[in-house]
Amino acid sequence: MALNLNKDLKMYYSIKEVAKELSITETTLRYWETVFPQVSPYKGANGVRRYTKEDIKTLRTIYHLVKERKLTLAGAKKQMKSGGPKETAETNSDVIDRLKAIKEELLGIKQELDAL
Image (spheres, rainbow, N blue to C red):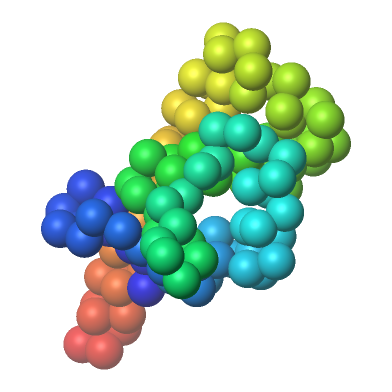
């Protein structure tokens, strides 16, 4: 089940929730935090990370650059710094997310029709 960041009223998400949403490991998230200064989750007194919706959006952009566009971490970091291509990556990431949601909805409709 995908996190619905637009309607969800939660302010913070756990590292487990974010890792599951992005289909990556918690270790990868922690590592990306050391590579990309844009990722800075809130850490409570006990060191537990809490990610905001903005953090997740940034992580989706990083995911898109590294996993989908196959950039190295250095290449992704460079694009994140420059700003221009980052906006394109965010837009592409948003479009991909919307298309995935539409696909899920269409598959649900197909299943309902097949059951008739």
